[in-house]
Length: 290
Image 1 (cartoon, rainbow, N blue to C red):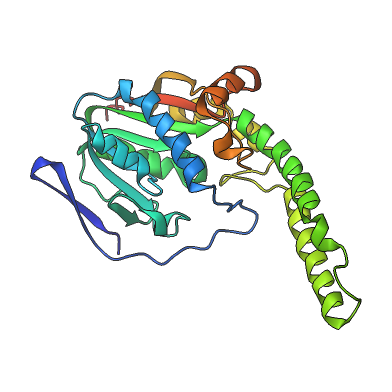
Image 2 (cartoon, helix red, strand yellow; image 1 turned 180 degrees about the vertical axis):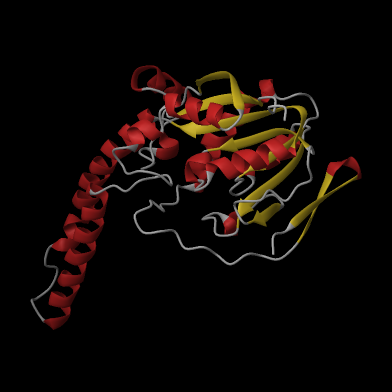
């Protein structure tokens, strides 16, 4: 059963429905969960950059809302917000806002009920983009817009390189536990075998990075995450790109340095190493007359 959402007076979001079964992440797809503090800092910086494009008091749908942190911030700034996410999200247990579980295919909102559809690092994980684009068109009110933040080929490149740096760092930090710490008895030999196995398994995993999104592989994502690919996809699915620009932040999927590297420094790094995410502003194209 797909949950539904009822909008009451004052645009209060009331959810109805059942929780969907948790979906396992397919093999070959990166399922690493970022530090929530690091993620929150990045996502709140994104809100600062998109708010100027939002009409005052707009009804906003946060598509793929994660913990709901961005939805909460948008609501704090005076927008009427509905947030939806698949039940199997890695962040389902850390929600800070009323997030409606849905099936990832059918948006549980009425036709023409939303002024702005916003997503952050979501569309690359959608298996059936054509269907979701169609659903977005359905729920957008006349004059509605979309704001999509998406990872770039730059993010893919530096995340891949960062995984090798993380492998080196992990191996070095694990080294003391790989050395004998007691007489070579049965217990010590078992401890060493387990320590070597865990270290080798994690290090090899870091040296063989997996794809981040739903399509392609770690190499082809250099094209699939390129802004040119997304411009073509949006046009093919009935949207006009009225503007797109780098978000101007640098970060990687390996969370290198995390909160130790402030946003001001990340902005400066983006000028040299490239922006890790890109903002697309869309409006739906008129439907062809029949």
